[in-house]
Image (tube, rainbow, N blue to C red; front, side):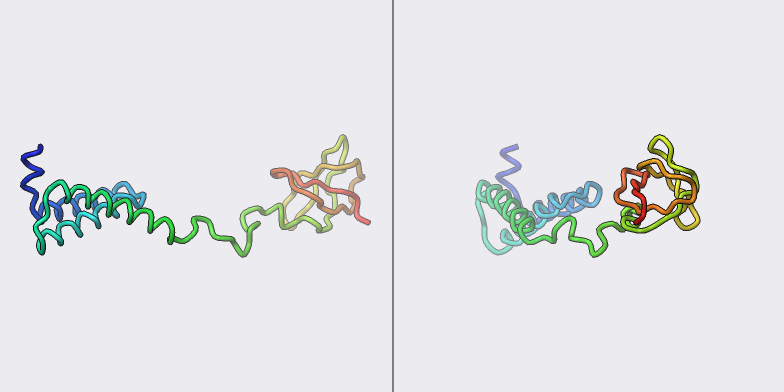
Length: 148
């Protein structure tokens, strides 16, 4: 292995860069691509300047680590703030709205009509046809209170 390392040529580094880029394609994680870039740089440097194999390996590792650190510092945040944070939380849109009971609330549970669907509702006992206001959501159950 040391004999191979002592005879590293520029094209070895470029083949390593291509292999690392291919690995990044199949196992994305934005890590291998930065080491591919550092292998490409080391190979390009070898075209211009002869570098001992020990320094080539150190340069490859250092460039890869620095590239990853720079990328992590300047990349876009993984989950930017949404303009509509409750977009996929349909029940959250109903908080504060008034609805009519289609099944009385007895023992803390009943049903209300929301548009063309019926939702489970929980709250204080109320008769059929009562108007209620949604005050919270617990999963798919709307928590209600009598409308004022």
